[in-house]
Image 1 (cartoon, rainbow, N blue to C red):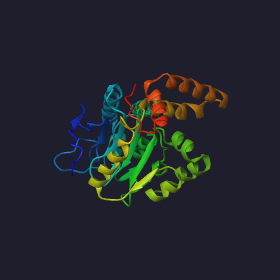
Image 2: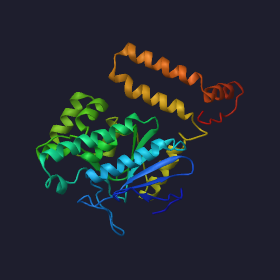
Image 3: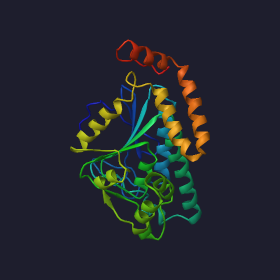
Length: 287
């Protein structure tokens, strides 16, 4: 696969997630596993199913990106051209105890909540099918971009006699509304990415093969890096949008005021206002 951004991936401890940071501050988190949730070997293109071990690798990668001050955007994607992720490994779920399954879901909840709690913008790039837990990962991101005609998405857990238990019912209801979310999950239907765009679940659809899609996603994410955007403002906008809808409206307004007050004291706000007055492009520094 072409690598115009010169990505130099390192494997996380369990070899189920690859991690790289571009020169302009985009942390790329790539899911890579076979149908059993084991590491890919050679040129393998697995469905990138996840296990507890992969969730641990995702956790490690997200924390690395969070503590890296040079990272402005976190971009999730899948290895290969066929799947973003097919969700939790059925082989794994069929071999563990109910207690393990409960704690597996709990840890996945905690891991995916990190995506919403970090101040960095999280963009999920669906290079292929995003089914079950794969869609649950995507829904924890701030923005979702999909590759045209590259696959389907859905939460078909009903066909296994269970529900989407790593944030699926909670996040989908908040994203598309109760009635649509309920129908979508009880029917277990799989839809095209174009349908997802019409449902306001997917923000953008890009054309091209897998390599071009990845490059286009990196190009799109680059607009949110320094010096193009004030990253503190991006983080505060995200915090207001993530936290605000979960609290009473007047509290949301109060939160918004406090977030704005903190930005007015930043160097980037002074730069942005000065650039507007002087009719020039702002050069943000992240301070």
